[in-house]
Image (tube, rainbow, N blue to C red):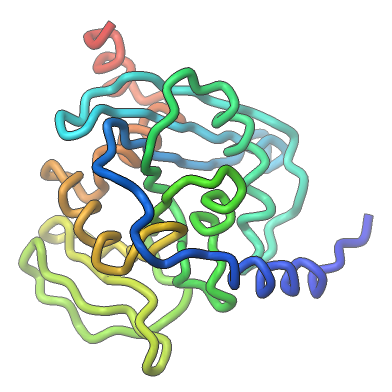
Amino acid sequence: MAIDTSELRQQQLEKSRQVVLTDDFATPRLIAGADVGFEQQGTVTRAAIAVMTWPELELVEYQIARIPTLLPYIPGLLSFRECPALYEAWQFLQHKPQLVLIDGQGIAHPRYFGVACHFGLLVDIPTIGVAKSRLFGTHSEIDQQPGSYQPLMDKTQQLGWVLRSKKRCNPLYISPGHKVSLASSLWWVEQCLKGYRLPEPTRMADGIASNRTKFKQMINKSR
């Protein structure tokens, strides 16, 4: 089946105008992390959402959804590939969070509409993109000291932040998704760091999705 990538890009441009870049939430009781991966040579999309208490950051619930992959890998259009599985996992949740940190881009995207924006609009929830690598934008060199950060820019427009979350680790690329301001996107990620490169909600989602032994043990202890 032919895929009209120009139509999908046009959708991104149109939807990006609906993204809210101001804080539209109270202090959350629950914060979630979301991560998407692929199995069986990319034919199955796997999404994991882990819900944690705030400020304790203790696991309350997690859900994993696996669905047939609906779109091939196309740079810049990953949200159309990932959001269906995220939406499926979201529907399973018994405890809906008030803020979601998503492993991926927010507005730090060529059309200012990464997966955190897409999912935030889809379920009408405040979201922050926490990416492990840069997709779009430029920044100055970051100091090696943990906690150092620089603005991520598209010419004169700020898209987000580049944060050194852990020593001797590559930085994180943080950008608002929906209903979250630039300043708050950085602040919430910083508050969720507990000595690892990733903030606890997305670290937990990644570990659960990957079925890592350490996270399985943590989950068993919390029951």
